[in-house]
Length: 314
Image (cartoon, rainbow, N blue to C red; front, top):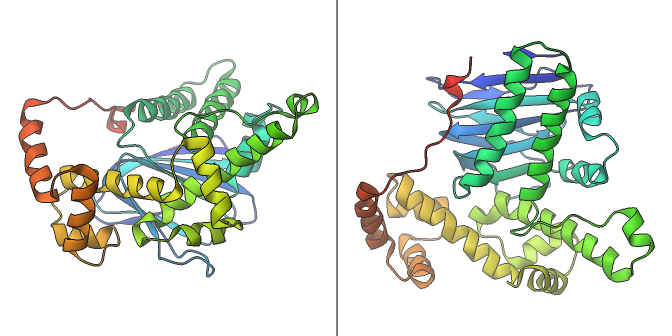
């Protein structure tokens, strides 16, 4: 365990029982916790009453970030491992400083953030580097230690801000840029924020088969505006993005789990294995059973990307 008063870092080794991940700060103190899942499963449950569709469950490599004031709990399943970073308000303020993106990051942190990193090894490596660098500094007192820790926290938060935004992240225009710009610049910034909120909702609810109108209602906009925003900025409709996310999760479950097709269908919110199979074949060109068999054959002859392990931490 590494504890610097306003910054807390702790490895979460594999255990025989599931456990709740709790920040070490007082409930009266504003704080945020970031949990990186190296292996296994992590769940967020007991969501606010206005939320629907149940909790969120992610498999490694994944990351969850939320305020300690959130009416929910983070649970690490038995056999899972990862790392837990908690920040007080003072630590967050020191890390963000007066940088132009500080406001956007704070807006991002208003809602729970979840990222599935399994399909993005480069993103995963960048985030891992930040955690390891923070641990290194906290373990080896040296001149400028606090500055280095704050710098690494800032890097981590910027990575989260970028990765939760879009496939091709672009910074939201700053105030000075808007002064000599046009209404189009302001509108672009608003669209970026909307897209980020939409992606966060998709990560939470795509397994419940929410309709596009459900997402629009939660965002407080019309379905037409959501459609126009995603097609303008990403070149894909909201429904296409939802299907892409479900397909990517299906690929991961078929190649990295022993779940049956019935179990995968239920996991992804389909009414039956037949419905899931029809969806998957239409998207991928192969029935899920044949796809899994093909991936099993390919795995024998392919090398997996090596992933850093927190078990090597000093």
